[in-house]
Length: 384
Ligand SMILES: C[S@@+](CC[C@H](N)C(=O)[O-])C[C@H]1O[C@@H](n2cnc3c(N)ncnc32)[C@H](O)[C@@H]1O
Image (cartoon, rainbow, N blue to C red; front, side, top):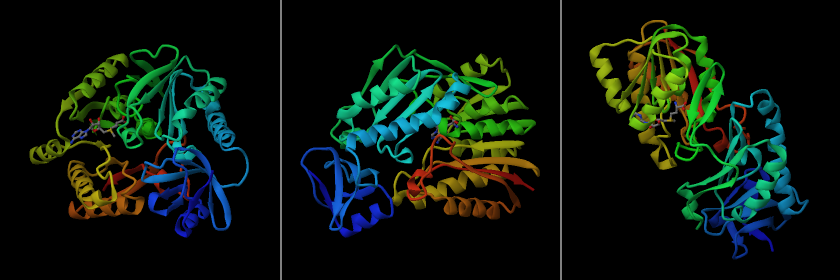
């Protein structure tokens, strides 16, 4: 059984973008599964096929070779092998072992937290193969436990149940992860995403290069940036709207013997506005908001929200201050992100120098053919 796509769908696959939308699928099986994809000119690749999903076809190979399941499992082996050296070097660290399309494994995510794994399967085509995927993971990576955290809402659109279930071992209620000189606790079952925001790991480590009196970590979650900033700043304020996240931030400060982090439960927009009115100044500010643009139609509103927090943050920095600012909305692409920052600088009447343009960690690979895989922007700026 094959999937037949329109010339437009074929053009996408020939350009090595793995997604073909429902409107470009001319013919396909009734059931989800792994199938070859073809257009008039022959087979274009192998794909996950999910008839209920808007993104009906997600290719994981662009060749007409091999049995689909074997090719998919080989892609998994390859992804895991690329991370093995990092795990051997830092067994107590945290890494993304599988980054969906970025690893030619659409709809599959696997994260590593100090010897414990968390798996997320987001496609009806992949779900029946979970056992085979788990077999490869078990043979490649030393894990004490593996949890399938399949509670993402998007699974309902695929007709899949929302559930969390162990595959093997006992997942502890919290895992202690080492990140450079800092340790933090992660709750794999109840935390956001698979427990933590691993994509910012290298950016958090980068923050240890800065020193000063006061730092502000806005959208702090578990105090993740604050823990690194507290190594070299006298006082750090960690702001988040979630009281539970801030309780964990305080606990993490204690784990590291730090007494200079003050959690502050607040709406970041209101907090920054109030700080501006009070005329408070910080030597360094981190802004790591949730994705304000979830879809294309949100971009305009999201742009304004990003601009507002960045403009206010710039105003809170003295000359020589540092703003480390992120966006994880792939709909707000890199040029738009820097345009937004330029406008914020101009509106604040400040000269702002770019120290470094960064992105997501190496273990969240980007495919040039798939702009959606380059989602995290992280700018380190200096206010002159
Ligand atoms: C992307 S996460 C931050 C990740 C964190 N910086 C890290 O490195 O682990 C976004 C955080 O923003 C918080 N948040 C969302 N909306 C907020 C708001 N309006 N004000 C303050 N915090 C908010 C969420 O609770 C979440 O912890």
